[in-house]
Length: 102
Length: 102
Image 1 (cartoon, rainbow over the protein chains, first blue to last red):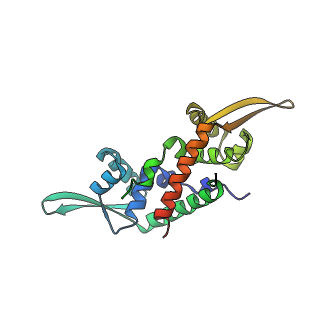
Image 2: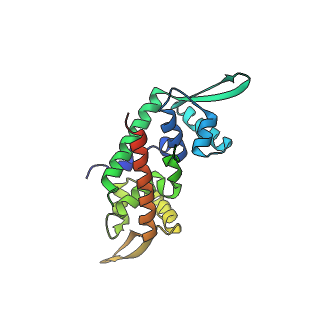
């Protein structure tokens, strides 16, 4: 029996809100904080905390700026972030294929 | 846009080691503690802690007994556990289909 697929999961990426942040951000060049907050239905504090974990791990970059006079925060996935997400997705695919039949 | 698939993930089931325990245990009538420990490469203490979380949530049942003179511990998934795992797997399948192309 090969190694169980969950061995390839990393809590930094696998945690459900961080997985949500990464999958959404990976689809676009950059994503706005408010969009993530509403799509994932998180509080600003909770979202900030998860973004900080991903930024610390260098999987995301955070940019602050203005849209007109309104302050905005955007996040974008780094190359390392895309790679980490690909590893996670590949492990999830293996898990679903192996155990998701029932 | 429908609700993001990560909204259906529950940390009790989604945490990677607990996901490993549940997916393995769901394939058989009951699974031995030592088998889970080696397959998931966990310490006894760490495995016990995660089993306790799943037992507390009534997703697993723990049985203690003997195999000859050797004490053994088995775990089996409850009906609620199978249901919770099915919800998780369905959310993971949606996530992989939606975001796992790259």
